[in-house]
Amino acid sequence: MALVQKRSTLKVWGDVIFAIFLREVKSQSTDKIGLIWTVVSPLIMIAGMTAMRTLLSGGGDTHGMPTMFFMVYGMILIQFFLSVLGKTSGAVQKNKPLYAFRQVQPISSIIAIGFFELLIKIAVVFVIALICFVLQIDIVVHDAISVITNFFKVWLIGVSLGTIFGLSYCFIPELKKIQQLLTRPLFFISGIFFSLQDIPREYWHYLDWNPLLHAVELTRYAAYPSYGHEGVSYFFLDMCTLISVFFALACYHIGWKQAISR
Figure 1 (spheres, rainbow, N blue to C red):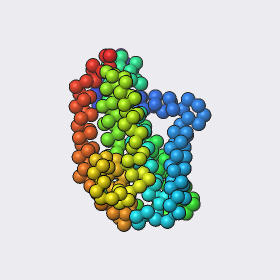
Figure 2: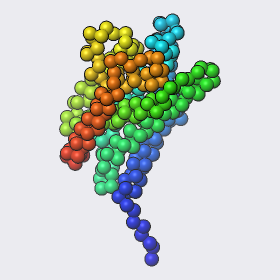
Figure 3: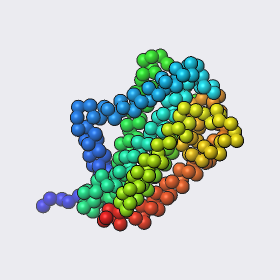
Figure 4: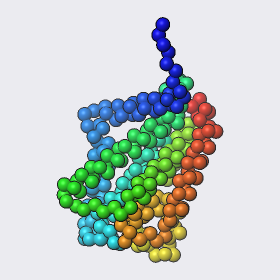
């Protein structure tokens, strides 16, 4: 008689997440350059915007750090947030047919797709580091742990907001247009092209409510302490991260069953 091996709930959940992760990889590899393009596309945009900013500023430094890396940190973080938010917000409905299997829940889809976006951005960072090595451009990271934790906080905020929007789409599909309207200005108000130090202090309150601005400025400061961190704080970024995660988990716990049944 065949021996039936019983798996724990955690093992089943892990297998489901991994299966959805592989499904996402396969969906991005529908043509010959599909998976490669997911890395090359953001890389081209980062390179283009960085070159434009460097030429306009005449090269050199921006507030004590090279202008190239000033732009790179800002572009990577904001692109990372927008890609995670966009993909995870569509995760609930994208894998809706799979919820017929009782082992598959929306949270598994959200985690798998969020993790896939994380790996893509790690690949982008690796390619940028490789290009800098080939071109003999020195990369200075004074506090690597703070840089990594800031990236992780941005990932958590993106996944959390994506979860909230994804559940909301099941009830009000028109919210997709509102999300697009809300996220478009982030490129201009999150400190990609400017530093908070460039803005007169009396206008800071119009911008410092944005946790992404804090993440960008603090990441630059972690890499180059000479950059400074006026007007931003780790406490504010940490609180925004915790509040986002709390509300996402609360909304998911309350409404995931109703969301997938609609």
